[in-house]
Length: 595
Image (tube, rainbow, N blue to C red; front, side, top):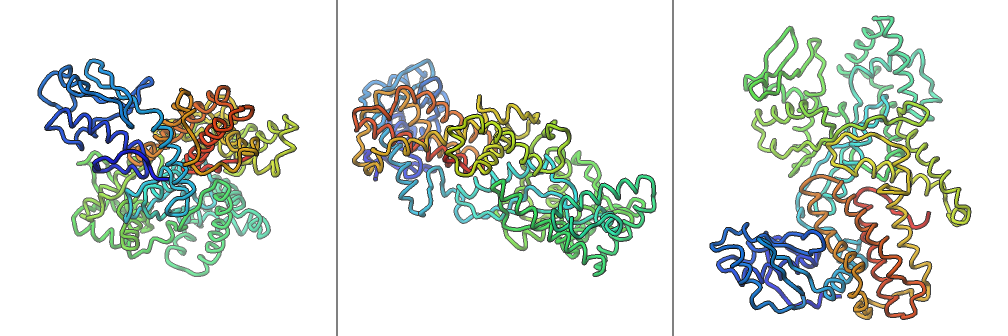
């Protein structure tokens, strides 16, 4: 259904067809610029901000740097004010003008837009909250990147959760996204495993769970190495054979890598994450690494210290970076440089993001600095999205090493909780799947709730609670909204939006609060793209869930005798369900319908 609002001049960077609040802000900007020449509508628009404490939008007059006192400027805007379809009132408060939107238009337009872009979207997929700001651009994003044969630990989990969010976010903003999982599939640990496999390896265990078995072998052989220095010597020889391309040394490694990737794909599927490309340190061609070294050498940036090659970055307070060990084997900085050059050649990206822990800040700064010293024109397209540590993540019995142990435990705790309500439990088709999804939602929300640079303490009880701002609470809010259709079959299917009378909602503060929140979702997505913070989307989802929860008692559907009112309320709740579901999907969470 097309908007019935009067037409407005267009303002650069706005798109009322995907974010209806752009139209309301433009109407406010037009009022301000009409009253305060020579201010243009585009300039005025930049000053229209969300208000606080029940105010819809606020304009701070001093920011325009116009001649005259704020009081005089405010009078000019207010003097001949008449309410219209966009704005119902303006109040002047010191240096600020506060604007309240026309409630009837606000509720009708927001719900119309959500419905249209969810069910009649031009792309055929629900698109409310998406935009086309990145159309024609390509992002390469590297995240997760566990080491084969070492445990998938907490740091990898954070990279996976934040990376999957950014992957979804850029797609929602129109970018083409190439997601890479850059596996730690090379290095001396493979020499260790190859040495240990002859003694501790089992084909059967390898086929059952390659990741776990190779890890076990690695732990045992590392223990041997503590008492027998010869083990490491043998391992180094073995890895040197791999680096030199000796087929007999590479054959086993290939099988191990392939079986590990297969197992990882299953684990990621459970987390609702998938990658376009599984690559790894092993795939960075020697030619690219050599090319990087040559370029640095030509530019006089490399010095030899006892046979090892170093780059001196002291001038930029970045220390000295090692590029190649004295024995001639590459280290991962060289592989990163080679890998970046190779990716540029392959993908010609507009931006490349590395989602890596803040402990690696120095490494990435050195790596980016070297690329810019090498004068690659694309060096400024690289970005490091970092994050803090997770403290104390372990199973309840003690240390956790593997991601699947954490997921299993979260699922079993949720399953126990669900069984306590026998009636509801008997209605769930697949309780194990539901328990797992709620458990994973708990893990993810706990991870994304605060700014990503903050460290946080992993807390089982808090994470899996239905009380407070937790993952299970969000799933519960979505399930409750979804159940509205099942509980009110006589109102389903709803008539088309043009035949739903929303005027009864205008007297409800709850309905108004929900509508303005729903209308702000496209802005939440745009802000997240600027900050790379999932926490803004998580906060939005909780604010929406709380607003809905406050409305249940007064905006009742079941038991409302006036069918027109009941339909309007049901439509409001279903639009809220669609937007809450969209926010959860953006966070890589699968919204549930029953629990």
